[in-house]
Structures are given as C-alpha cells and as structure tokens.
Length: 82
Image 1 (cartoon, rainbow, N blue to C red):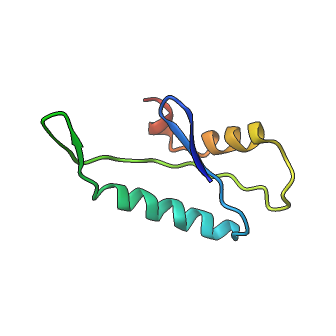
Image 2 (spheres, rainbow, N blue to C red; image 1 turned 90 degrees about the vertical axis):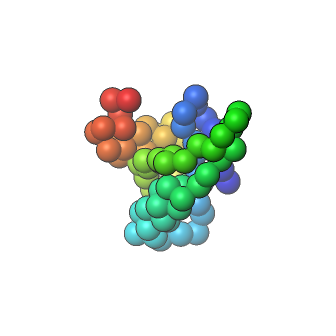
C-alpha cells in the first residue's frame, strides 16, 4: 500500500517482508527515482531525489503513529532539516 500522509511525505506499507529487505527496497526506490524525468509546465524535471527512513514491526503489533514516528526518526539528519 502506498499513499501520501503529509505535504512532502509518503508511506509505503510492505507486508510479509524480512526487515533486511525493507532497507534494500528503500535503497532501490531512491536510486530509481534519480532516473525519472517528469513533464512539468514547459519542460522536464530531472534530478529528483528521495530520502527514506524505514521502520519495522516484526511481530505485527504497534500503532501507525509509532511506525511513522520511527520512520521519521530514521531519516538522514540532512533530510530532517529541510
């Protein structure tokens, strides 16, 4: 499941995935976005970047708020200040 939950934030919910694979998928997504060219107004946007913070509830328990707080805390420091 994928969706926007804040002005510049999106959440991707993955089920039945190993915690180590979450990091791999996040890295893959960030790398693939670098190659996007998006039509906007009279030109193309390129050089789009994404940073990610990941959080996992390995036992399937917890709240959405705790998961999002954990993902925000895992963002690179530079991303938190922008």
